[in-house]
Image (cartoon, rainbow, N blue to C red; front, side, top):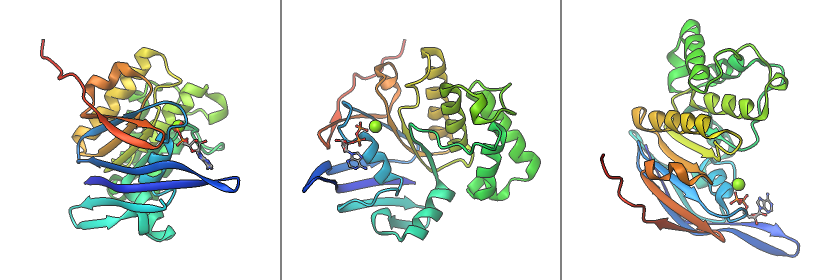
Length: 240
Ligand code: ADP
Ligand code: MG
């Protein structure tokens, strides 16, 4: 599944004027690859993810998701159809984890599986449980599965949020600054996990990151400046 944004423009109301958050953005993310997006605060990175994730409809342009069965323009889907696409094909990680206060870490993941998704549909309850376990282990929270959000630190909540987004083997993964609240070792482990999911499950992935240490592992690197997106040439990784 590939994601393509073509001439996407997004504005927000700004007093009597409008603020251009995305200015004719073009981006193509093939299945199984990660596009990293860097850039200063306020440049439009989160807006780009919100548009790709169908949470905001752009003023103009196309957001095309290409699947085995055809293509769909996410920018013109009804709210209801967009919600279905999100639930069944997307993994979405925003900076503020909106975890359900009453659920434990393991339950956050299990509920997501029951709500839909390629994997979720066919997984039995024990399979769902063990997949949730596996992901909580992978994000470094093996002994926190029974804890509710209030019992977790900010960084731990962020990791639950990431594990939850991976629960349904998404084919489109959008991730906003996943390592910002983590130390470098945990951050590297999270990037490893996202890389594995992107490559093994052929997920088209957009990763917003401030952290330059991981950029050499990305398939493409872009920079956002004042709503304009441009490709950054990265040094070719050399084998040692
Ligand atoms: P980044 O993620 O790169 O920090 P954002 O996409 O969050 O940038 O924001 C881009 C610009 O759009 C900023 O100037 C921000 O203030 C503005 N903005 C973001 N969200 C809204 C909103 N909901 N309403 C109005 N302006 C917004
Ligand atoms: Mg942001």
